[in-house]
Image (cartoon, rainbow over all chains, first blue to last red; front, side, top):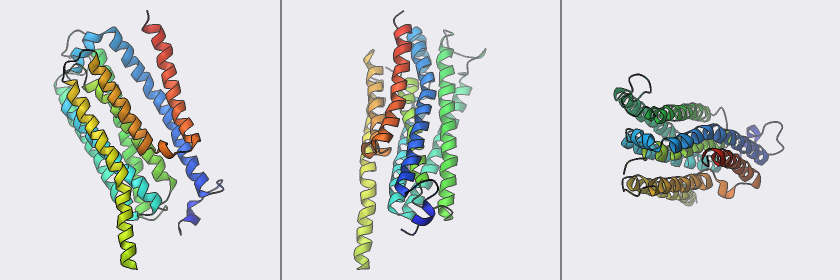
Length: 210
Length: 100
């Protein structure tokens, strides 16, 4: 492979070790991210246990259609990201760039849906505060978790789009080689953000529907 | 010769998509199941089923998209370490709050 020369950096003895170093670092970062999000999941679990009825009343007001469509969008973006990562290591340049472009587009579509949903939520007076429409007042606790959890998740998606766009442009301009460990590392991050959403769907959108 | 290599290239590209598309299809079926079951009145089982499906979906993504099925033990250990502390946090806090 002609890329091999520019691919290897200090202090790595081989490209394989360098690749494993990048993915290992990303997995350690994901472990800290799990703990970061688990504080929110834990808080949610405890408050749901203390106010089960208020949480059911509150959860009925989330937009299940937006939640479901957004899950499908994120999963499809994970598919194109997985294919991009596989084609990059096998040297399929066009396929990699195409899949990364689709991933970026789907990420933006997710944010667009989330924005429309936030607009509806605000119109329906579902922001905790003096104007909040639901009773009992404990329903505000659920909605506080909704805004913080989906908000932080959306920030993660935004960061992901920024990273994927940067790496895609660098590969397209041949500033970094196609087989760079960066594609695999950012794919791990993207899939992790997908996993967080997989758990937000049942907790925020599917509860109290039946 | 070159036609042959073009054909093997196409074969290889098909091979790239095969596994990810299968996993994606499974994820979509599970999504339909979880959303559908949420509207069937099953009492406490609703949230249990939905969380179980979420765990299956997360496992599929972690194993096949994040490639833990063929990662080195170092990477698997790093992935499990995050999960371990997550479980510990829930056990210790739940052991207090949920048994009061």
